[in-house]
Length: 164
Image (cartoon, rainbow, N blue to C red; front, side, top):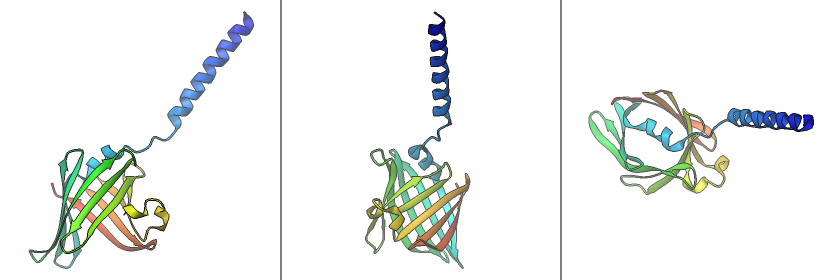
């Protein structure tokens, strides 16, 4: 009887340790939930008299994106895109077209609640070898920063502010 009690106590302690250990494991970021942080209209000063405006409009389980560059009040570049969550990849896929250019397909994933990585879809098998990469971070709910890399070297930083 004493051995049975000791064994039961050991089993309960083991179960408690296993449950505590499982709770200590870092959880994977919820990609679909985190994608929703982009909703709204965002502005970024690209250069003197040049503003980029990016609208993320909820559509289905993702977003329709509209991007335009405005120089001295005149639109000089426009693009459209769709962002959506791919559950098989556990990543966000974006397909976008800028007027006058080929379609671009990218994959994006959050590595924390505030930080994400975006690379061309074709480079998904070897992200460390991607010729282009963007790293982004929400600095606050209404401010984000993107750093563009070419051949793993930072080439451009953009700061975006949500206006609505």
